[in-house]
Length: 196
Image (tube, rainbow, N blue to C red; front, side, top):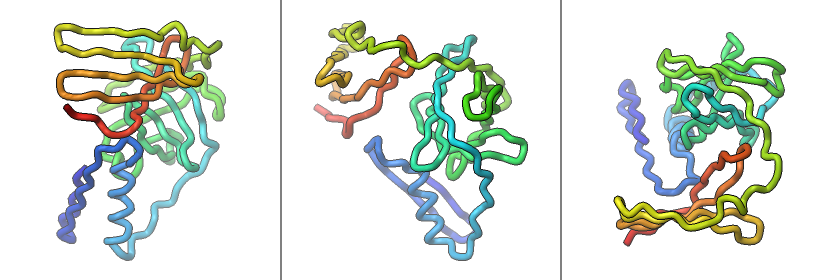
């Protein structure tokens, strides 16, 4: 993550290979300390929402999360902090604010039935997914391989937790899996990528 503030000659560079480090949020904090006299923007507060939504055209999934009192959307595997604008839509905040995307919620304010996601001027409609109907972990447990790239994936159920282990020619990575909706799983890194 690189942020430049040319008017004061400041460059902030955050490097991290850990999933639990939010580089944009950390860089935003560094800017707040280094640039004295900045006023915090006035924030519009609304109840935090959770739920998963899927596009019928692309199959993409967006998950709304509440994290430390902030509204977050997981989009393409990245947790992005959001804020409300005056038009009643959610937009990326902090260092993600340069991303040209908008989330407009439809239906009940605290439990929307759908959302419209606009990214770089391209709109897409997402329908709310039902919560998982039951524990379906046993259905995905197994070993899988792709000989073309020399990679394997192993899914294990350990103490009611679903784990994914990916191995390839250059290393391995471990993930915790969580079912978002029936048949849709989210992988979250368990730490460092192990090379070699």
